[in-house]
Length: 108
Ligand SMILES: [Zn+2]
Image (tube, rainbow, N blue to C red; front, side):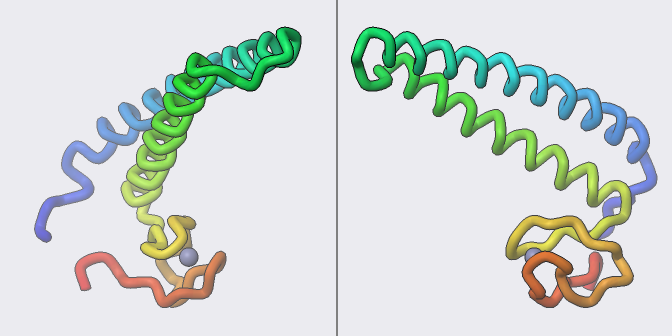
């Protein structure tokens, strides 16, 4: 891979930072919505219905997008993302500080 991290990197970082902010705000809203639906179901003596499941699914997607954005941002910051557990590591590290798996250096 020969694409440069530097060219456009700053712009992409700003974009990701904004996207992460938006996703976090959306996750808070959806979590509140899920809580309301769960409580309404509780009050009605019902298990969480399809509506709640839909919100939960959306939350899964949002959390997935958020962690993808965070990982990309970490890579742009020069951090090594562990391929096993997704934790960000200092590029000087040979092994993941979270799971202990050997880290592959970018470009080799
Ligand atoms: Zn790891």
